[in-house]
Length: 410
Picture (tube, one colour):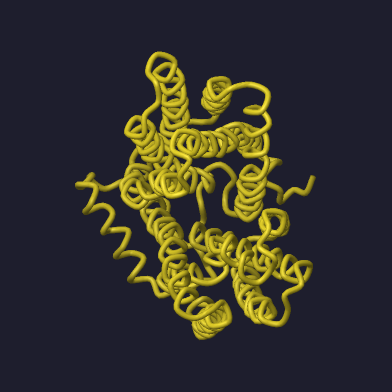
């Protein structure tokens, strides 16, 4: 194993083992709740509402817990977060054993789980540099991307299989045990001391605005967050529109859609593997961002050239790979450039934009497609991708000025 690998760090191995169980449990729970809503309503609309109930709370909860993550013992925070998710799935099993399911009940459970699940992202982003230090941060983020993207494929497949041979109740208890196991494993993490020069705590909204001001005052951080927002309207939005894309540019069968989704997942996993082997050199990471944008432009344009499922699947897989490189590369650079005392707030701002962007992009690009066609949509995406590349290239000198990044304490 390479010395630069995050897995050479004992603390990260503990964290990563817990993350395997925790991430699988989150995706299994998301799948199960959507399935339960479908079983009760037989309505695609309400399944969509359930998905929104899982996602939308993050737009409010993420900034709040970005502030909290800069103030608390991160070990206790992560253990409590995973334990709380297990409590919700356990309570769901207990309630549904004695209370017949209803739409208001299911939606209430879903929103509560969405709120609690959203709290963990700032905690995870903040603890990573403390676990592995600056030199292995690329590796740690890359392994995280591999785990995230493989779990979102494996967990639903496992959940569907378990439902086919057992019951929803059994899957709820499997999720509960996975969350509990993740919490227990993370008890082995070290307790990181808070900085001695930590300023007096302010109300959370004022603390969050401190992170916003820091991000705005730094040209380097500002451009990366702006690029993350603009880029959300291109490759990541395309992934959200795959069902419509499949139905318009290919035969529209379920098998075609499954092929496109599988190729997107494989591309993301390969991107995570690639990033897990990179060094934390600012110039190299910047070149990865530029190249990912450039090749994304090529493959988005290539989608206009054919209706061949094989070629479309290849392009979708490559775009997914390149978006993973851009997303993980941006995260690594921001982690390196941000001061330890404000990292949670800055990263929560980036994460909020990364979550909100694709949702807004799917709405806008879906509307553009509705009133025109996918050709116009892809041309719009290509123009935005080109804009990102031009903006990033134009900030080369400012990036060079930040070459001497502050060291991340271990």
